Image (tube, rainbow, N blue to C red):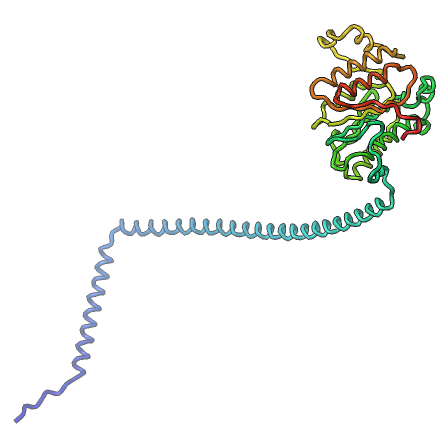
Length: 358
């Protein structure tokens, strides 16, 4: 006969669980109370110090946060300022671009007007046609760098000494005498014969020297440069004395040196370059006396001053030098002196053209 099994009672297990939990709770409370009773004053003090230290660290962190916040605000303000400046720069750039466009348009319009004026205005210099004679009794304008020296001293007003003094006190308009017009026409004729591949320069001289190309070489195939330079030279008025030596010394300082020099003058110099100290002591007595001469100068002194100028000019590299010699009374040495200058400078010539030339 089988043995009858015992009935299972769940209440018994629940009761045991409750009792176990209760016992555990009592033990836990005991341990907590025991731990609290065992805490020492030193531990309590350390806890208080830790709390205070934590409060200090909190304040430090808060200060740092406030500082960073302030820096962030300043940075934002700076960014806003830079953005405003950037916008202003963009606006200014647009204005500059508009201004540049307007200037380009104005420049284009001005250039068109200049072209119209140039087309309607005849050239001061008329180029010679093909086959036209390029020289006069052996004077041919040639070379890479060609210099014209135009004498604008008072003697270029007339060939008569008395008439020169009379004309020198007239107004500038009245100084456009027949002889001076011939000199200017000669310069115009010469510039019209410039080789197109050459460069040129024009100087005028009396007691001083003036370069009408600012000491530079201009292209002969540029009609604007030729016309404007010639116009500038033709505006000078004859006055004062003639210092040929200063003009020739200025010529030797040009770079590069000219291949050809053409002098338009009427006679020998009346003024020379003086030197001081040791340099003056080596001059001949006659040269010193002529340099110190005042008022009317003798033809002999003019010859001496020319020889002095020529000597300094011919030192070093020779420059082919020709002369168009207009008439002047009382200067018997002029023709032979300028002829010798041409021969000694490398093949230049001296001509005395007819009164109706050019």
